[in-house]
Amino acid sequence: MHRSTSQIADHAIEWARARLGSPAYATRCLAFVEDAVERPNDLEVFGGDSAADSADLYRDHRRTGDPPRGAFVFYDAVGVIDGVEGSWGHVGLSLGDGRIIHAWDRVRIDRIHEVESLPPPPGWTAPAWWGWVPLDRVLAGAQPRAWPTDETAEAAAQRQQAESLSALRGSDDVGR
Image (tube, rainbow, N blue to C red; front, side):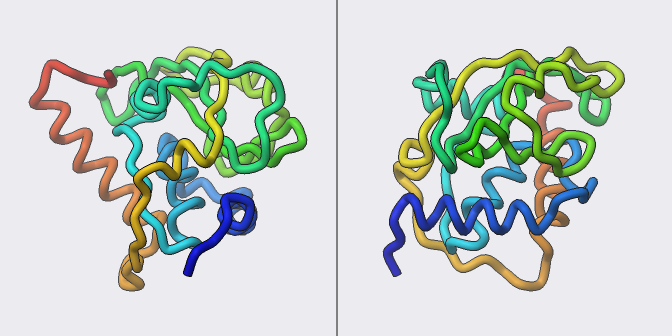
């Protein structure tokens, strides 16, 4: 089934709003926004391993002004995840009204520029606005995918993060 970018954004935001208040995606902001786009739309998108990597991959993330509904909104942030320090960045999903839904200490909604004032977790820098990328850029190269039902999206995100961090511990290229 073919859906418009607007329909994909609507489904993504509905999926994300259903997780408001959940701490399950803490330190997994990229997994959260990608799952929001992928899971309810039966798609797989192909970003980077972190929010910072994805921002670099999409290349045009330094857009200013108000991001449209469904845009990925990026911030610079450096911190430690499970003992691995890196320039991980931060990302949220634009609601199209000057706010984003994102995974911080829990899934929450904040005004786009107020994210920079959130208290950072221990060992982290405060997020600094980078810009945004439209959803159609994120969807470039996306493929249809039926997601398994034997593992929740939250559990899969946690498992994938643990696997990635384990691989990084054996590498000199951490966090970018």
